[in-house]
Length: 180
Image (cartoon, rainbow, N blue to C red):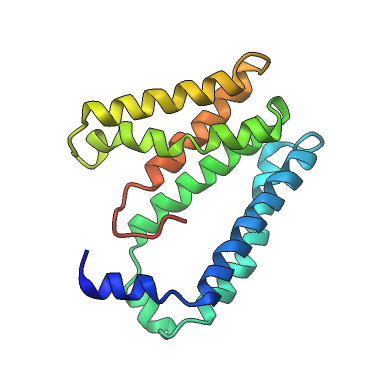
């Protein structure tokens, strides 16, 4: 890690910390609302309106940046952004489709298995070396999640939410890009 990166990490502004905490709260609220709504409406409608309402803060954040629109468009990676958008759409759709079958707490725990899936996909996508310690950590993590979620749950719900986690793991393959 370079000294400039280390120095900037130490002087993280409170507004950035507040923004991260606010976004975590908003994601929790969206999950809770989606669980309520997913019992009455199909997953594709829930996904559409989640994406539509998420567009408002995304556009607002883009307008607040230092770069002009022409500079942003000149540096736009259309192929990369398209792949990221499609995997986000798939992840959201699968997650919302699985919510009627699985309690919210277990659904979120399964969805966060994406970090463990990244360990297993790294050799395939990024051509990284898979270590025994990485495999052991992924297996141990899956065992903990499986032990906590599996017994009373629907296999359909688990498959949908794990599919969502796989889509998120694939989306996170760009080490230089944002993880959102």
